[in-house]
Image (tube, rainbow, N blue to C red; front, top):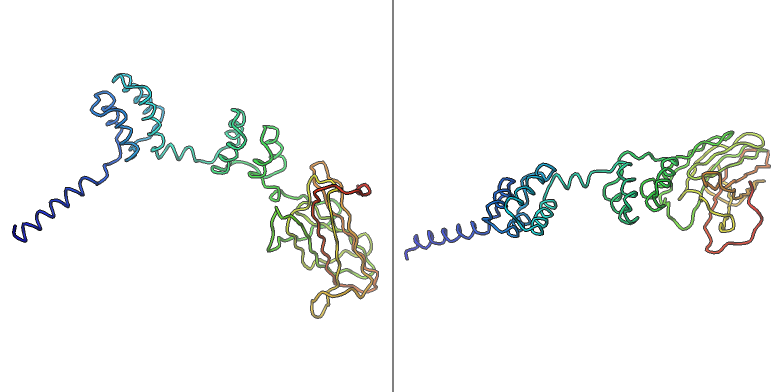
Length: 315
């Protein structure tokens, strides 16, 4: 064979091979109906085409009814028809979009009412989310009433995202997340830098994600920066809380923390939970010096594995 003949033959073989491996187009709805009625292909072979190539139509109530009618007319095997429909469901773009769309609260409640396993509801909520859910304590309580467990509620309404309402008689301080903020951290801490007026006493309340202050003697402390690494405890008994409070002075010229030289004291106590289950820490800082002083206190705490014996918490 001449070289030109070899080239023509090679091109013909290549074209034939390409035609054999080229994927067919997506399966058309009319084609499925014809196959079910005329039996040109076995239903299982039709299912294989759907699994390989996908479908060109939406499997909705109307198209599903027509498929079932065609299968009945063609006396197709019910099990094979069920397999075909399942294959169409998996290959249906619009069906998948509907299944993955964010849930409403009512849809979430329906899953719970249907008796879905808690883990199944959790996984679906994690994948789809819930689009009209308010981030509030009230919404969390409504989910509890509907039968949602705490793991699901924590996923949808993270505790540290719930707002902390101002305390009457206190000023709200700007409390910032630390760089290492982690709501699930084993140990928690709060660090507050302030300027205390001379001969003054300020009382701080650290509750959930809020920090509040009032002067109980003299003028109120001035905020110089407040950070925390996790929310204050919730529904946690005082017998399981181990806490520590440290106080250091700030050099006004250098801004460096150092040993206390003036008459500054700090005392912290753990408060009982409010009706919403929010515990809090009360920190009292006193400056007995006649001049204002800058200082920084750090409250640290962790939850014990075994309760300890102590006096009843302050109310």
